[in-house]
Length: 203
Length: 184
Image (cartoon, rainbow over all chains, first blue to last red; front, top):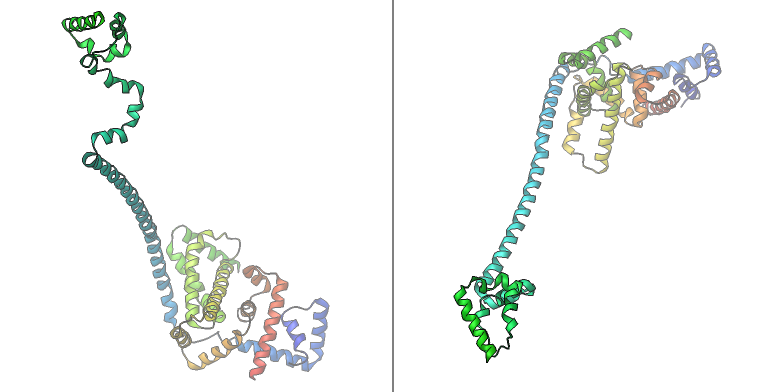
């Protein structure tokens, strides 16, 4: 690289301050060598600009705009389709979700059907009662109902030590009042029972 | 420049009010400048064509955000320079990972819109020089040397300070002169 090149490049790229610039221009006015070197560099740079006045296929530029419009149309179509691209996976996700929910419900029902079948076919009434009705049995009021129902006047033990007040106590008992068959008996039947009880007392 | 700017602004306004032909007018006016800037930056027709089309699509979609604060020419140039630099990055990445298709490389070197062979050779010589300059310095060199833009105009386009641009151009000049010296 020639010794003035650095100076010339600084001048061309406008990197000199005012003082440097006027000093360079003064030197340029006096030095033929510097003028030569500057013009050589400028020519070299101008020589690189080969892009002006080129013979090019003008059809390229004629067809450019239609091609751009075609791409724009495709893009617009793509954006319209894009909604489908979003819709398809989201629908699939919803379907999968419903499938899982539906399937789990079916499983739940099947489970109950199995229990029902097991109860109906493989377990005795006593086992059903022990296994599945334990809560009912532990409920005091409900537990009393069957015991105070029909058994009352059918199974009076022969050695029952019942006093005179027993009958009225039985009648006054709220459970007996609500559930006993005594209330459903006719006066005639009640007289029979009364007689039986009295005979027990007299004995 | 004022008259040009007024005409451009008029075209933009027409386009924004729904006149598609105004967009065509803008494209026809600037398509060669867009293409040649991209071509000088990228060195081959196929990449330049790709960038040119991209720029036009961006223009079509973004003209509604054009704020009339700068000339349309500056606005378009911003898009061209950015897209060209992006394309260079894309190529570099492809080359780095060796995923550049060989057929495509061949096609890039053979496809051209320049008709006669002597011109193709001249362009090829310049391309070899330009490709050795870092892309950002190349960008400044092209704008200064080929497109005769002032530093102020380049500053508006690139968003860089005038001082920084001068330094970039200086380094680009130095490199170009070294490379052309070697050849001679």
